[in-house]
Image 1 (cartoon, helix red, strand yellow):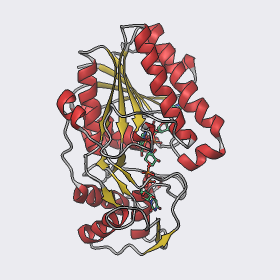
Image 2 (cartoon, rainbow, N blue to C red):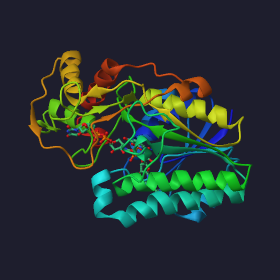
Image 3 (cartoon, helix red, strand yellow):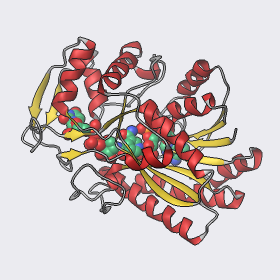
Length: 339
Ligand code: NAD
Ligand code: WQD
């Protein structure tokens, strides 16, 4: 049992990870500024697990908030989710992304160093891979400079953490490169709660299915893929959450900084996702084909063998589970946590 600080723990992936940690009998301390989440998610986490966690409303950019946590709780490790994540928004307000994601991470790492806490799991993204790589993407492939500012912040923080670990061998850092997280907890009590018009495919599909939006626009049907639409590696958020527990266990034993892909290793096209959603849930999803979205690649999916071999992690859920669980969450919470 360890004391784990989870930054951004009220958010989509963080709240699912809180469940995994509490169920593994860890003590959970969440720091979140609620800029893209609600405390209700944490209330439901506690309801589901019948365990309590400590919530601190605060900001990773505020060293006083961080120092107080490290002083008041004997933190053993940090899982760092906090940050902004909307690709389109990052092009409009880059400084907010540099501030939250890069400065925030620097402030966090400085506070950890001060408190002599050297175990960190960082939410990175498959977006750090050079676009010229051919899927399946493995961790030894070259990284590139992402075309959007959000992805750029992930690359910078990854590289910064690598250099910090190289300079001081007390550090033990996991860079988890997520592919496309979707789905929700089986209970339908917690899930993804996007604000405004969703950027990502899965919440857009569920909002069309529930009648909040008229139809799905499929961005491009002339890619060199199985049916012309973009291919991605969708990963159930519960499987993604369990990867954090595996990474934490690994990092409490090994030193240095290392990256792991977290994906299923399978690619599915947009049309396959839409059609399977309709089959699994029995709900039609009206759609139209629209032009390609700028910055999209045709195909991206993982080689996940490193995570399986080194972390002992494996994805338990397939596409049908992801689509059923996304819909279960959406239909039980049509307005997300705002009901
Ligand atoms: P989310 O927005 O649901 O969760 C992020 C949480 O961080 C929110 O609760 C938000 O309120 C909080 N936060 C933001 N800035 C903060 C700050 N300065 N101080 C304290 N709290 C702050 O997003 P998510 O989907 O759960 O993503 C979690 C992490 O995983 C993010 O770092 C994201 O970039 C990364 N990631 C997400 C995806 C994805 O598709 N969801 C893919 C790859 C990587
Ligand atoms: C998936 C597929 C779209 C919406 C993004 C970020 C990435 C990571 C995950 C954080 C693509 C198509 C989408 C729609 C569509 N986030 N699509 N109509 O672009 O793979 O990854 O989220 O790290 O950094 O870039 O995910 O869900 O937006 O798109 O046709 O309304 O669905 O073109 O092929 P993406 P996505």
